[in-house]
Image (cartoon, rainbow, N blue to C red; front, side, top):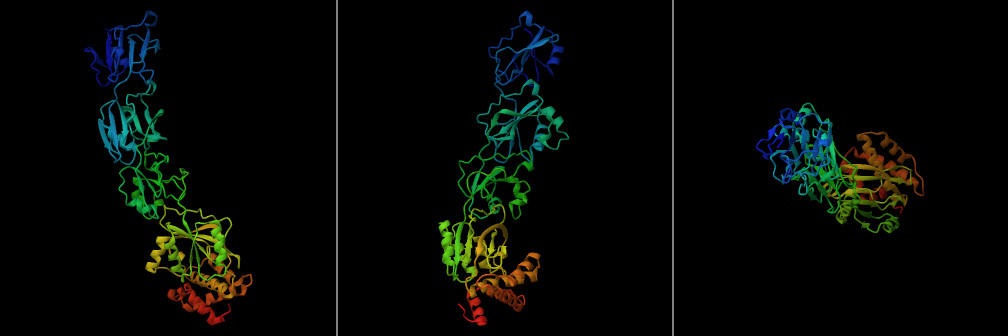
Length: 534
């Protein structure tokens, strides 16, 4: 029988088998015309080790394939130099796996491993740390986030790729969590490497995919993603936070290679459904945007929750007409009528709402034809009010005054409970202006109603200009005092002047200025100055 050589772990098939560094080393050691090159991973049951080639193939190296590659690591090699390779032989199957190294991401390894370690920060550092303790030449690296129940660990690379880093995709993520590694070359090539992506020779295996274990789905009902995330214990490196049912939704696969790839991934425009990595917690203070790595390219086709619509009216002459316009277009709209005082009316609307926010539509405004109430709040920020623009039909200004406002229900109730609001109720809570035209401000309805709107807005503008003068604020106040059109235009100009005078007389006292919130006080102020004109 010919000599038999192997590298690595001893196959224990023959008493005379010898260890060699490689085939060339075995050729130097061999004392027979041919020698066998074998490995401990292959099933040699029934293999004919007495076989030798016909004379015209005597100078060829004969290679037996495995079920995975055309070179399964079994060869009959001439001791003298080879002139050619002959691969026309039957499959000799691999039945064993190289040792398995397990990386635990905190959710626990599900299969037995020869070595295991905790995942820390990124794969490069984790691999370098554990592989420095490994004595075998080749190993598998597996991760607790993947399901290996159908994975074939007998896989091996071709002879031309045996020094590469082989990466197996996790679902649709090519930068996966499963690796086949030649340990010595990996440690050598990563001594001064900063990113695993920069490894000299990476082979992304195309035809084998390893599924990820399903991420935990955490349902929450709050009006912000932040408290839901901050209060979660995170049993896995990633979790899905959602306010709705998403059980049948295909979710994107987030790469865990390093911190920058572990992105927050909103799946709806409002981000009410979002994939969040565990490591984001240490970055978040007041909003999810405190975390620097956010990927908004995976929005799914399930809609965000639509917020309720509440029409708020008191004594406005056009209230019924404007309500009909709104309700004919949006049957889900509700109406709150006759509640005296702005803060009380807004709280009554919050009580009527069944959603975390509601769109407040005010009775002196006519809904704009293009406004459709599809704007959604951003759950990645702290809760806030959203203010939409209104076109003022009396003086032509277009900004948030009289516009539709998406009010945060908890914010309304908190403000009223604390009484902690300034002269502009809406601006006293975190807020954001949205440059969408929502309505027309048709407040030119009677001398009193025209005066009342101009009085309240001009008093506020004068107050804000005294606190922090801005170009926009000064311009708007000047327009209120100098421009008006319509049947009751003079009352808009008078209301603006009276509002500025009222601000001056209050001498900056907020409690005095807040009297302008009360409809009865405004009516009495007007009658005292001008009489009952309506």
